[in-house]
Length: 207
Image (cartoon, rainbow, N blue to C red; front, side, top):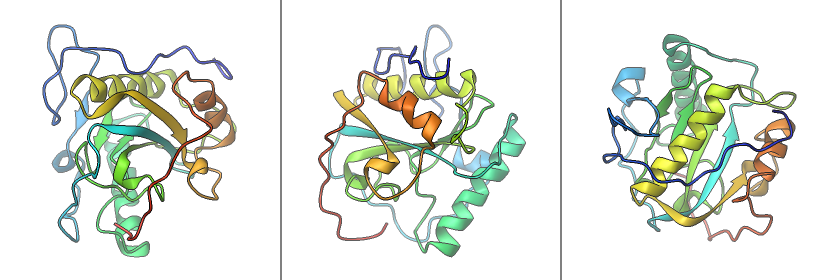
């Protein structure tokens, strides 16, 4: 699958509002592990609502370290480590991402659909930031993670949180970073929703 794009983002599905996004009959919505379930800390400050809804951008990230997970317990521990780093070292109010995805195929709730993230300068107030756990410089996330990424974005479009004409960008398009890894970024660039001309908004604060 490397170097190819077989997933189409933004399709319609039967969903309910964000939380545990599941439909027992025919939903593309991925299984979601709530903040309580993965053991999130209380945010250091009240979250700020997004400036734009539905958002025009989805920003794709990788964790950037060679820590991978294939079960909920391991993934939850890594998500907790992300939150701890973002709060204790970076000085942010919470985990920076809207959602995190593990190679177990689960979504881990970060700041969610409605609140400003801390993941991409110029885009935090107008995007959903999704991080896949691991380092994808030299390989793609597995099929479970890529499918979950597709399904999560489809859910966002369906419930009106992501605009139907949205664009996908890689984190490196917002700042000087290697994220989301060379191999994963090639995959992102092959998506029909990818744009090489994103338009940032002025960012005046760190969230």
